[in-house]
Image 1 (cartoon, each protein chain N blue to C red):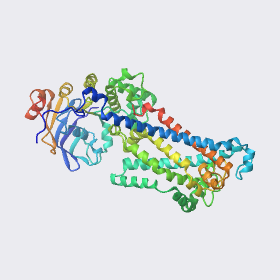
Image 2: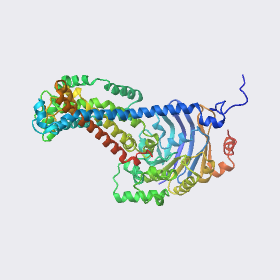
Image 3: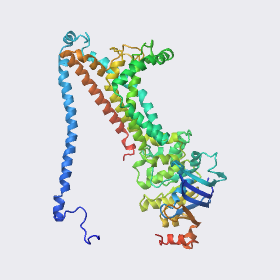
Image 4: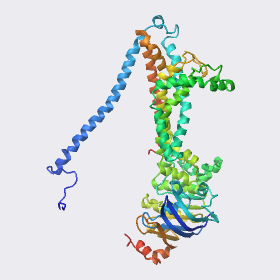
Length: 333
Length: 259
């Protein structure tokens, strides 16, 4: 079989003149349809966000407009003094404390694991380890809660005692350490493990994307592997690490079940990580009170949920600001 | 500062694949040696064995001797990291560190080598290195701006400044002008002529006019076919290579008769 001697330019419709094919192509219909579809998807996310906001604000309204005295009268667990802000304040404190603690423990560990996978481990080991870390994300949070309260809390007691005994002069480790360790410290450790997979996965991807060119530039200057990581990999990955940490923080802020099962709750502004009955988080508190709350109680809890929503939003905006601050040095230009 | 390099019987492997076979050459101090040859003939691979950069690819290794100033760079007690501090390299595409300013880029190598350097010394070194790379006048007012904001040619000269800031003995250049326009190329070629006073330079180039313009000696690499190793066909004074080469293959290549 021989090919025909004359050939049309590729893509031209045989029945159309060139001018027609420019305005009536079949491709342009599919193109427009897809543009609409993706625009619609984009709008959906905005609509969802707006709907959640509206729901939270409307449902929280009664708790905000009712007088604190009346709320205290109608809700058994509402404080006598301080009003709604007085109620949500310690919860915000506890939420941030647990989440920041988790981030402080989890991020360095995650960066270490990610660097090991991307730059140190032999390829086969790296792959296996990557899967294992991803597997951590597949464990349901209720299982983490069981593990935290039944396995970790008894076993972490010596660590807490050690910290209280030798570092007790730092207010954070003020003793006596609680037995069993139903403390925000234990919660921080469990949350750190829970946010490890997302931070590690994002960091690993970012580290692997370091341009070969920059790593070779460092190597050619006589950099050791550590120095390559310091001069080429970490600066390149900086904004990615921040994004990863913020994703982890978002998860830690909203984590409910594990906190509920481990933490012995309290409503104090206390930095004493090793003491029980001091802290509570917004999400765990909602889960704890919701089943037996009346109308006013539910409204109050939703108001605390609105605060959590705002905090998470603020954290994300802060992260974006940090990332954009040195954008011209990021290599994206 | 410049050093002589003696390469003898060098075989370069990727895994079990012999990529470059049996290279012997002598590179005199304060000269420019150009390596030319068709794509895939192993000239870049060979260049990267001169500062042990090819080893960063898993499975890559070299057998034979590369002696610089009496020291075998492939000796068992030689640290490749130390070798690279004495043999600088400039790459095909300009690669300043994007997160660093122009001044920080120049100082990157010095900072790496764990040397503490006073602020005044650092400023002097930045100026001296940028002067050395013919870039000072263009960037002296914006040393704290990102290096990635410069033009391609300026970026490449910044990379040269970064390489010479650590005061290497040898400077390797892997097609340093292939991503640049003719004006920038000319600026780099002028710079090479000046750097020759202080450094031993080995440059890989696809551009034969460039080899003829900048180099004192030219080595021609060729490959017999796919899967066969690249070999050094001949190396001689540049004027000889481009007027009366000894090998027919060299003449075919430089006169454009090569496929």
